[in-house]
Image (cartoon, rainbow, N blue to C red; front, side):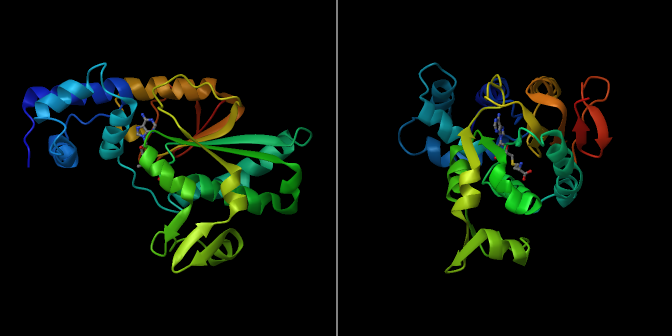
Length: 270
Ligand SMILES: C[S@@+](CC[C@H](N)C(=O)[O-])C[C@H]1O[C@@H](n2cnc3c(N)ncnc32)[C@H](O)[C@@H]1O
Protein backbone atom coordinates (compact mmCIF):
# COMPACT_ATOMS: atom_id res chain seq x y z
CA UNK A 1 0.00 0.00 0.00
CA UNK A 2 1.18 3.53 -0.80
CA UNK A 3 2.31 5.50 2.24
CA UNK A 4 1.25 9.08 3.00
CA UNK A 5 3.83 11.26 4.76
CA UNK A 6 2.90 13.00 8.03
CA UNK A 7 2.93 16.44 6.40
CA UNK A 8 0.74 15.38 3.44
CA UNK A 9 -1.62 13.64 5.82
CA UNK A 10 -1.89 16.78 7.93
CA UNK A 11 -2.54 18.88 4.84
CA UNK A 12 -5.30 16.56 3.63
CA UNK A 13 -6.88 16.26 7.09
CA UNK A 14 -6.96 20.07 7.41
CA UNK A 15 -8.47 20.37 3.95
CA UNK A 16 -11.25 17.95 4.96
CA UNK A 17 -12.00 19.87 8.14
CA UNK A 18 -12.03 23.25 6.43
CA UNK A 19 -14.14 22.26 3.45
CA UNK A 20 -16.38 19.48 4.74
CA UNK A 21 -16.21 19.67 8.55
CA UNK A 22 -15.05 16.06 8.71
CA UNK A 23 -12.29 15.44 11.24
CA UNK A 24 -9.97 12.66 10.07
CA UNK A 25 -6.92 13.74 12.03
CA UNK A 26 -6.80 10.38 13.82
CA UNK A 27 -7.56 8.35 10.69
CA UNK A 28 -4.28 8.15 8.83
CA UNK A 29 -4.66 4.46 8.13
CA UNK A 30 -8.22 4.92 6.86
CA UNK A 31 -7.12 7.72 4.51
CA UNK A 32 -4.27 5.61 3.18
CA UNK A 33 -6.35 2.52 2.58
CA UNK A 34 -9.40 4.25 1.12
CA UNK A 35 -7.39 6.45 -1.23
CA UNK A 36 -4.85 3.84 -2.24
CA UNK A 37 -6.66 2.82 -5.44
CA UNK A 38 -7.39 6.44 -6.44
CA UNK A 39 -3.74 7.45 -6.07
CA UNK A 40 -2.26 4.39 -7.72
CA UNK A 41 -4.54 4.47 -10.79
CA UNK A 42 -1.79 6.18 -12.76
CA UNK A 43 -3.13 9.73 -12.86
CA UNK A 44 -1.01 10.83 -9.89
CA UNK A 45 2.67 10.06 -9.39
CA UNK A 46 2.48 9.74 -5.62
CA UNK A 47 0.33 10.47 -2.60
CA UNK A 48 2.12 13.77 -2.33
CA UNK A 49 1.13 14.75 -5.90
CA UNK A 50 -2.45 13.76 -5.19
CA UNK A 51 -2.64 15.79 -1.97
CA UNK A 52 -1.05 18.73 -3.79
CA UNK A 53 -3.64 18.49 -6.56
CA UNK A 54 -6.76 17.87 -4.48
CA UNK A 55 -6.04 20.75 -2.10
CA UNK A 56 -5.38 23.16 -5.00
CA UNK A 57 -7.79 25.30 -7.05
CA UNK A 58 -7.20 22.93 -9.97
CA UNK A 59 -9.13 20.05 -8.36
CA UNK A 60 -12.26 19.40 -10.41
CA UNK A 61 -15.71 18.96 -8.90
CA UNK A 62 -15.62 15.35 -10.06
CA UNK A 63 -12.30 14.61 -8.31
CA UNK A 64 -13.63 16.25 -5.14
CA UNK A 65 -16.68 14.01 -5.41
CA UNK A 66 -14.44 10.96 -5.67
CA UNK A 67 -12.55 11.83 -2.50
CA UNK A 68 -15.79 12.52 -0.61
CA UNK A 69 -17.26 9.23 -1.77
CA UNK A 70 -14.13 7.50 -0.48
CA UNK A 71 -13.74 9.29 2.83
CA UNK A 72 -17.30 9.63 4.12
CA UNK A 73 -18.79 6.96 6.35
CA UNK A 74 -22.19 6.12 4.92
CA UNK A 75 -23.25 3.40 7.30
CA UNK A 76 -27.02 3.51 7.89
CA UNK A 77 -29.96 1.15 8.15
CA UNK A 78 -33.75 1.07 8.26
CA UNK A 79 -35.44 1.77 11.61
CA UNK A 80 -32.16 3.08 13.07
CA UNK A 81 -32.68 4.66 16.51
CA UNK A 82 -36.36 3.88 16.27
CA UNK A 83 -37.47 5.91 19.30
CA UNK A 84 -37.09 9.05 17.15
CA UNK A 85 -39.46 7.61 14.59
CA UNK A 86 -41.99 6.78 17.32
CA UNK A 87 -41.71 10.33 18.63
CA UNK A 88 -42.14 11.66 15.09
CA UNK A 89 -45.39 9.68 14.62
CA UNK A 90 -46.82 10.01 18.11
CA UNK A 91 -45.91 13.60 18.97
CA UNK A 92 -44.54 15.59 16.04
CA UNK A 93 -47.01 14.71 13.30
CA UNK A 94 -50.15 15.23 15.44
CA UNK A 95 -48.72 18.62 16.46
CA UNK A 96 -47.99 19.60 12.88
CA UNK A 97 -51.37 18.43 11.63
CA UNK A 98 -53.04 20.73 14.12
CA UNK A 99 -50.66 23.61 13.49
CA UNK A 100 -51.06 23.49 9.73
CA UNK A 101 -54.69 22.40 9.49
CA UNK A 102 -55.47 25.19 7.03
CA UNK A 103 -52.32 25.40 4.87
CA UNK A 104 -51.83 21.61 4.93
CA UNK A 105 -48.12 21.70 4.27
CA UNK A 106 -45.10 20.70 6.34
CA UNK A 107 -41.40 20.25 5.67
CA UNK A 108 -38.97 17.64 6.95
CA UNK A 109 -35.22 17.45 6.13
CA UNK A 110 -32.98 14.43 6.40
CA UNK A 111 -29.55 16.13 6.46
CA UNK A 112 -26.86 13.51 5.79
CA UNK A 113 -29.35 10.98 4.41
CA UNK A 114 -26.70 8.58 3.08
CA UNK A 115 -28.33 5.78 1.03
CA UNK A 116 -31.89 6.91 1.75
CA UNK A 117 -33.17 4.65 4.53
CA UNK A 118 -33.92 7.59 6.84
CA UNK A 119 -35.96 9.80 4.45
CA UNK A 120 -37.87 6.80 3.10
CA UNK A 121 -38.72 5.72 6.65
CA UNK A 122 -39.93 9.26 7.42
CA UNK A 123 -42.07 9.29 4.27
CA UNK A 124 -43.63 5.93 5.14
CA UNK A 125 -44.39 7.21 8.64
CA UNK A 126 -46.05 10.31 7.17
CA UNK A 127 -48.04 8.21 4.72
CA UNK A 128 -49.15 5.92 7.55
CA UNK A 129 -50.07 8.79 9.81
CA UNK A 130 -52.03 10.80 7.25
CA UNK A 131 -53.53 7.81 5.43
CA UNK A 132 -56.08 9.01 2.86
CA UNK A 133 -55.73 12.57 4.20
CA UNK A 134 -52.27 12.76 2.71
CA UNK A 135 -53.77 13.48 -0.71
CA UNK A 136 -54.76 16.94 0.52
CA UNK A 137 -51.37 17.53 2.23
CA UNK A 138 -48.03 18.66 0.90
CA UNK A 139 -45.62 16.45 2.88
CA UNK A 140 -42.26 17.89 1.83
CA UNK A 141 -39.35 15.53 2.44
CA UNK A 142 -35.92 16.88 1.53
CA UNK A 143 -32.95 14.49 1.71
CA UNK A 144 -29.37 15.71 1.24
CA UNK A 145 -25.86 14.32 1.41
CA UNK A 146 -22.38 15.25 0.23
CA UNK A 147 -21.68 11.78 -1.14
CA UNK A 148 -23.15 11.46 -4.62
CA UNK A 149 -22.41 7.74 -4.51
CA UNK A 150 -24.65 7.29 -1.43
CA UNK A 151 -27.23 9.57 -3.04
CA UNK A 152 -27.39 7.52 -6.21
CA UNK A 153 -28.20 4.43 -4.11
CA UNK A 154 -30.79 6.53 -2.27
CA UNK A 155 -32.44 7.73 -5.49
CA UNK A 156 -32.69 4.17 -6.78
CA UNK A 157 -34.47 3.12 -3.58
CA UNK A 158 -33.57 -0.57 -3.96
CA UNK A 159 -32.34 -2.58 -1.01
CA UNK A 160 -31.21 -6.13 -0.41
CA UNK A 161 -33.10 -8.60 1.73
CA UNK A 162 -30.50 -8.03 4.45
CA UNK A 163 -30.94 -4.21 4.24
CA UNK A 164 -34.69 -4.60 4.46
CA UNK A 165 -34.74 -7.12 7.29
CA UNK A 166 -35.97 -4.69 9.97
CA UNK A 167 -38.71 -3.09 7.88
CA UNK A 168 -42.12 -4.15 9.23
CA UNK A 169 -43.91 -6.67 6.99
CA UNK A 170 -46.87 -4.32 6.69
CA UNK A 171 -44.64 -1.61 5.22
CA UNK A 172 -43.00 -4.04 2.83
CA UNK A 173 -46.49 -4.86 1.54
CA UNK A 174 -47.69 -1.30 1.34
CA UNK A 175 -44.62 0.69 0.34
CA UNK A 176 -42.21 -1.69 -1.40
CA UNK A 177 -42.13 -4.15 -4.25
CA UNK A 178 -40.02 -7.30 -4.19
CA UNK A 179 -38.21 -8.67 -7.19
CA UNK A 180 -35.51 -11.38 -7.08
CA UNK A 181 -34.87 -10.69 -3.42
CA UNK A 182 -34.51 -6.94 -3.97
CA UNK A 183 -36.91 -4.57 -2.20
CA UNK A 184 -37.66 -1.31 -4.01
CA UNK A 185 -39.69 1.53 -2.55
CA UNK A 186 -42.82 2.28 -4.55
CA UNK A 187 -42.75 5.23 -6.98
CA UNK A 188 -45.23 7.05 -4.74
CA UNK A 189 -42.83 6.95 -1.78
CA UNK A 190 -39.81 7.68 -3.95
CA UNK A 191 -41.41 10.67 -5.64
CA UNK A 192 -42.21 12.20 -2.28
CA UNK A 193 -38.51 12.55 -1.45
CA UNK A 194 -36.48 15.34 -3.04
CA UNK A 195 -32.79 14.35 -3.13
CA UNK A 196 -30.10 17.02 -3.38
CA UNK A 197 -26.33 16.89 -3.15
CA UNK A 198 -25.50 19.40 -0.42
CA UNK A 199 -22.46 20.19 1.71
CA UNK A 200 -23.58 20.97 5.26
CA UNK A 201 -20.74 23.49 5.49
CA UNK A 202 -22.57 25.70 2.96
CA UNK A 203 -25.20 28.35 3.77
CA UNK A 204 -28.71 26.86 3.90
CA UNK A 205 -30.81 28.39 1.16
CA UNK A 206 -33.67 25.96 0.56
CA UNK A 207 -37.07 27.40 -0.33
CA UNK A 208 -38.86 26.03 2.74
CA UNK A 209 -38.29 26.62 6.41
CA UNK A 210 -38.30 23.23 8.14
CA UNK A 211 -40.54 21.75 10.83
CA UNK A 212 -38.26 18.82 11.59
CA UNK A 213 -34.58 18.28 10.80
CA UNK A 214 -33.00 14.87 11.21
CA UNK A 215 -29.21 15.20 11.28
CA UNK A 216 -28.24 11.96 12.93
CA UNK A 217 -24.79 10.42 13.06
CA UNK A 218 -23.35 13.13 10.81
CA UNK A 219 -21.98 15.72 13.23
CA UNK A 220 -20.08 13.06 15.20
CA UNK A 221 -17.33 13.54 12.63
CA UNK A 222 -17.33 17.34 13.00
CA UNK A 223 -15.19 19.63 15.15
CA UNK A 224 -17.08 21.34 18.02
CA UNK A 225 -17.05 24.80 16.39
CA UNK A 226 -18.18 23.42 13.01
CA UNK A 227 -21.02 21.55 14.70
CA UNK A 228 -22.05 24.62 16.70
CA UNK A 229 -22.17 26.79 13.59
CA UNK A 230 -24.18 24.16 11.70
CA UNK A 231 -26.69 23.83 14.53
CA UNK A 232 -27.16 27.62 14.41
CA UNK A 233 -27.81 27.41 10.67
CA UNK A 234 -30.35 24.62 11.28
CA UNK A 235 -32.03 26.86 13.84
CA UNK A 236 -32.20 29.72 11.35
CA UNK A 237 -33.67 27.42 8.69
CA UNK A 238 -36.42 26.16 11.03
CA UNK A 239 -39.91 27.34 11.89
CA UNK A 240 -40.77 28.17 15.51
CA UNK A 241 -41.59 24.96 17.34
CA UNK A 242 -39.51 22.89 14.90
CA UNK A 243 -37.57 19.86 16.07
CA UNK A 244 -33.95 18.86 15.58
CA UNK A 245 -33.04 15.19 15.97
CA UNK A 246 -29.40 14.21 16.31
CA UNK A 247 -27.79 10.78 16.76
CA UNK A 248 -28.48 9.00 20.06
CA UNK A 249 -24.77 9.07 20.93
CA UNK A 250 -24.55 12.84 20.30
CA UNK A 251 -25.40 15.86 22.44
CA UNK A 252 -25.61 19.62 21.98
CA UNK A 253 -23.80 21.84 24.46
CA UNK A 254 -26.65 23.40 26.45
CA UNK A 255 -24.61 26.54 27.12
CA UNK A 256 -24.27 27.38 23.44
CA UNK A 257 -27.17 25.83 21.57
CA UNK A 258 -30.19 28.02 20.89
CA UNK A 259 -32.37 24.87 20.97
CA UNK A 260 -34.32 23.65 23.99
CA UNK A 261 -33.57 20.10 25.13
CA UNK A 262 -36.68 17.89 24.96
CA UNK A 263 -35.40 14.34 25.44
CA UNK A 264 -32.19 12.49 24.54
CA UNK A 265 -31.06 13.57 21.06
CA UNK A 266 -34.26 15.59 20.55
CA UNK A 267 -34.31 19.41 20.59
CA UNK A 268 -36.86 22.11 19.83
CA UNK A 269 -36.84 25.69 18.61
CA UNK A 270 -38.99 27.59 21.12
C1 LIG B 1 -23.20 7.69 9.06
S1 LIG B 1 -24.13 8.47 7.80
C2 LIG B 1 -25.65 8.81 8.67
C3 LIG B 1 -26.88 8.44 7.87
C4 LIG B 1 -28.20 8.60 8.61
N1 LIG B 1 -28.44 9.98 8.95
C5 LIG B 1 -28.26 7.71 9.83
O1 LIG B 1 -28.25 8.20 10.96
O2 LIG B 1 -28.30 6.49 9.67
C6 LIG B 1 -23.34 10.08 7.73
C7 LIG B 1 -23.60 10.79 6.41
O3 LIG B 1 -23.19 12.16 6.53
C8 LIG B 1 -22.67 12.57 5.29
N2 LIG B 1 -21.82 13.77 5.45
C9 LIG B 1 -20.62 13.86 6.08
N3 LIG B 1 -20.14 15.09 5.98
C10 LIG B 1 -21.04 15.82 5.29
C11 LIG B 1 -21.10 17.18 4.86
N4 LIG B 1 -20.13 18.06 5.12
N5 LIG B 1 -22.20 17.56 4.16
C12 LIG B 1 -23.18 16.69 3.89
N6 LIG B 1 -23.19 15.40 4.26
C13 LIG B 1 -22.13 14.97 4.95
C14 LIG B 1 -21.90 11.36 4.79
O4 LIG B 1 -21.70 11.38 3.40
C15 LIG B 1 -22.80 10.20 5.26
O5 LIG B 1 -23.64 9.74 4.25
